[in-house]
Length: 305
Ligand code: SF4
Image 1 (tube, rainbow, N blue to C red):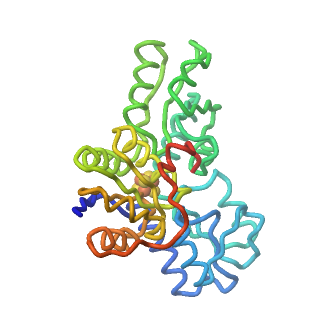
Image 2 (image 1 turned 60 degrees about the horizontal axis):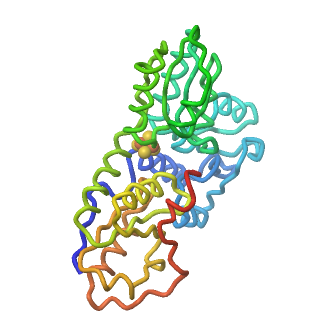
Image 3 (image 1 turned 90 degrees about the vertical axis):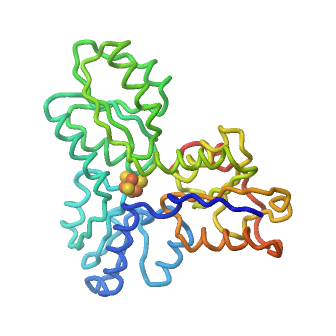
């Protein structure tokens, strides 16, 4: 069986930086009151379990953190003001917000402070989106699809700024910008906040999908960017399976294919992708026990983070 592995598969820069900060903290022992992350540091259960074993705990809200503890702000960032609330509770803060997310937050702040209303393309429930919205100083409208924005009444006398969650699809965003500027003649400044990493992964996955019989996308089932890769691959008509670990591989079915594409999300450890590649590349690889596969998970469950 031939395996074509994507060069872009695996951790992105933002995830690497965040995990380096957490690793350094674990090694140093934190501030003595325990090490916590506000929400999961990344959307990968295998990585989270490994950190749990090292004593890192995940809490959902700043109020859950005890005084004297250390809190790591994850790559998605947090809503404005959370850091101050943590410091006021006597918590040491380590900010691991991805520099690209931080830049998007600050650009939104700058433009909306001059009176522009934010138009944000993103998933309502995603933590990064909640953070970005909190930086809007003059109101915000959130939309998840181009159609949704087209149904919104925009005030012709108002000034707007358009931005996106960093992991959204660039083509759709550009089409939205075009709708606003050319069709609706809005006074709008376009902030290009989409991360190229996401686009590069999706483009490479599509290129590979066009040349293989079957595609495997590795990553947490809760990882939005992994699910979107599976969605764009499925849209090519190539059979595609989103798996978290080698235990999810339906080996009997996979053996029917001669050429398989392999990629992973921005929060997928290299070791998990290596293991799957090893199994796929081995003609003698025995069927792997595990839970039933979750085919095309991305397409079936929509865009929750
Ligand atoms: S996908 Fe891009 S914006 Fe998101 S954490 Fe990774 S590098 Fe940062």
